[in-house]
Image 1 (tube, rainbow over the protein chains, first blue to last red):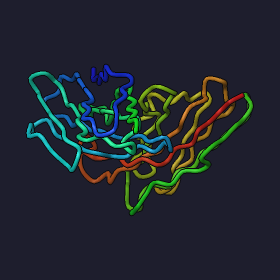
Image 2: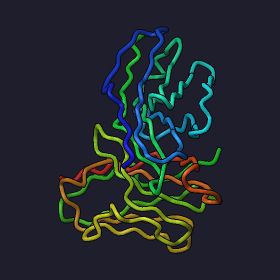
Image 3: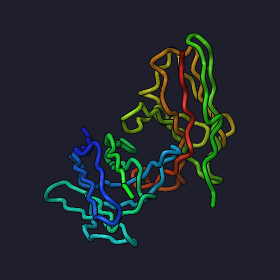
Length: 113
Length: 117
């Protein structure tokens, strides 16, 4: 069965600190896709990134970076120089097999000015 | 930028009443999803449509929930009768639906927050 674990329930950092959100996934499929979404207080889920299982290259987009390691089944997300606007709940999600999308429980990030 | 529209944004109802939520996906998106998100949890799929057809409704409590997408565009999710445990965020998402669904990015609407008293 597919499963996503986000062990960090809540994280608080001071503005300008770097922060890493952990994501560990489980699947028996060799082809799968991993996603990160941001959910601000307004409620909508905002798509951040999609990565397929055959591409282990790390990716950087501005202050955001993602570290995909198949050996540890992890897809961690780092925010560099965090800002107050980064405060939100962040979800990691997995798509594999016959299941379109399975979400973790999310990590609530609070960035304090 | 194209967005998924949902209404209402908030709904308060009493138990045993009927409620309905509406979703308009991004134009041209063939696949539409309804999710339920309980406070402190990730979204969980309720039903998935490909055009007007239901692809997956295995997690939809069919004794009280129903969903339709009659013309393959917008969709309605109904709960009748509502129960206290139905209080949650109901999210709609859409994807292009042209390739393998496994790899498609889903785009979400703002959700409807339901409170059942």
